[in-house]
Length: 520
Picture 1 (spheres, helix red, strand yellow):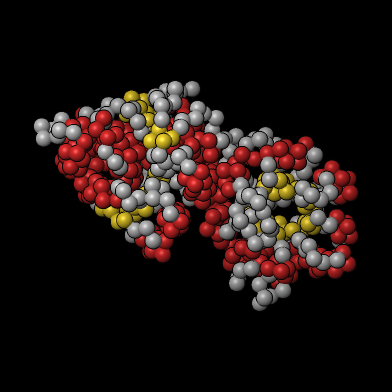
Picture 2 (tube, helix red, strand yellow):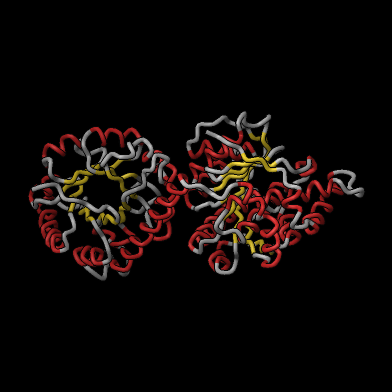
């Protein structure tokens, strides 16, 4: 008998202790298969071998009925006794090589992996698939650390792109995070997870069939997003010149529609960012409560996550707002204020990037440097002092911005004396602006708000939104500094807001100092 052909898309891992009390485990398995489960692993840590074999035979009757492979967790004696289609082993169980010798060449063999090194060993030892985890915290295991999509991606990227070894992710996988995990973990080598392994999200659900249907739908959505991103990297995008030509109309549209932006921002700049949003033509709502994030997601057009005020309640609101914005396909702008200044800020930045799909990241050199470190980009390190960068910045800032954008599958905007924006394919340098912008509190946060307003009216090109958002603020800064009534940073602040309102759409074209940057 040849080895079964396996679809790993939705992989059910059972746990009798977590099974919903309204039905038997066997019923849960059959319902889940009817909902789209493509592979089943019977995991029963507390049963003796005789009882395990008896249960496995009942389950196998169901899985064979639907032509769904059944794997046995850890206990190869059970797998052999019932002639299961294969087995799954952990790092602390029998070795992959020994398991293969027992099972034979035509059985499916999977192994748990939590590091790139373990994945490479599994590949060398002849595993058919690896279970990558733990992705998020879970009820089924006591763990010391989680990988998140960023850690999963690091494992995918050590595997050869065209090798037949399959990959699934496990640990805390739920309907609300599945699409994000699949799309965001895709490797630079083109590797995309072949499936999700789920325990409580199915066996503990009130309706196992419906839960399975929803999980499979989210997996496919995430896979499509990841695939399109890979394809987009190979396609020609609208050239920079054409993007700039569209800025006058983009500002006009913004003022006509006055899109509502949900700000979870810091106390220091909340008033300024609200006034700046209004002056530009948008509409702000400053709402730092997680309880209203879902309701607001229905009415806002974009979201700003700003970690300047770093309290647990603010972070929880950001995670909720980001989650619901993702669900509603509303653009999310992330401003990692002072990301590298403290370990808490760095950890929070990592937490947000792992749990929210961020469409646009806006930061200074130090903040972008911290994100590059978190996601595994090999770049120079830029130190932080408070919320400010120290030193002259990157030797090749455009390359750094492009690398981070490509790796995070988003747009990255890095502000400084010269601003840089990239979507991983197109990269520009923006040379507008005035030094007074750097001498008032919150000018960077104001830029994030401006970007969010433009993103709300440019849903199909967040690169254009980021460039336009920075340019509009920089032009307002130039115009304000040139006024006779501006004597320094204090008078500049008020004039800055005025000139946002006075900015003419045509000036977005005629006064732009934007240069495309060509990188290898």
